[in-house]
Image 1 (cartoon, rainbow, N blue to C red):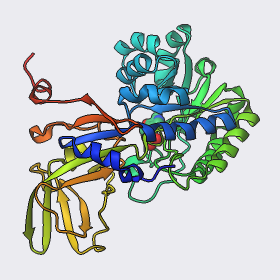
Image 2 (image 1 turned 45 degrees about the vertical axis):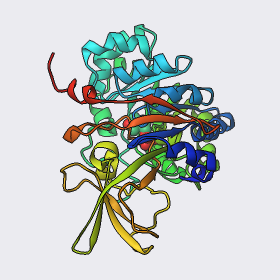
Image 3 (image 1 turned 180 degrees about the horizontal axis):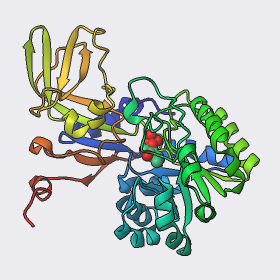
Length: 398
Ligand SMILES: *Cc1c(COP(=O)(O)O)cnc(C)c1O
């Protein structure tokens, strides 16, 4: 499994990246495929099916690279469902939407193989027509089992009062035999960047609360958040659990990781625009913005890995890296360098394929970075370039 910057040590890769105008994202096809191989082996060992959660990564030029390893795509709504159907056509298309709209259902019937509902009410309303269109139906359950670190409540669907998934209390109050008869499977998604141990804990809660229904199900979808391609992830432990669940209940298990498909498979290359000292802090301003181009840095929050840099106090020249927007908090993080950064220096952030290109924005009129693919032979292909029109057309006129 790849380290974040392994490929930048190759001279031909370093040279190819050096020539790209900044800011730009670069998606590393070789690492995408390596992730695919890891996921493919889990499927071989367990019989589970693994889907790409497109909300994390939807640069469809790379879907052909992933397709041989995956069973299909997972979508959050009608646009992602269509993208999955169009761009990974041989794969299954599964949709979980927190609330479906009546006007989207016809289109979803065309694109989807599985539809997962977030409430018994929506299952009752839309389920019968979906079923008669041959769609396999599921309900997202909420095992009310938080396994995430403190401070990540934005990513915890099991937080008290959560709107995500049906709790056992809601189920007991609202489920009817007619609606139950529509169900082919159960879905839960409670993890974020977690290991198999947390899945076990969650599974125990699922079994305890919803176990009586499992023998009636054809499939169980264990959602995303499985950091399977991360160095040190306990794959044998995952495989053991998946096999046990499949055998015990006779269900097809699905996993739908987003991050794990494209983990460490992207870079964001930036250039230093300005450097200024204020009260002992050296502010280095880049041509890439946390707020616009790496929004999870602020939302999660986290400090992205930076090629060649150290922790805040580690090397001789401590700096604070920030974006060119007017937002005071558009700060990427505190780092340190062996040499003082100069205007014109290029910096490379790692693990930038996920929750970036599919989530960026033009706040402050900020241009969207180009997107390139880095091929296994170190050549690059430009797959998207943006301009003024991409900023303007979303704001008006007609
Ligand atoms: C976000 C999400 C995923 C993917 O999560 P990752 O953390 O990227 O693996 C999968 N399924 C559902 C329902 C999600 O909301």
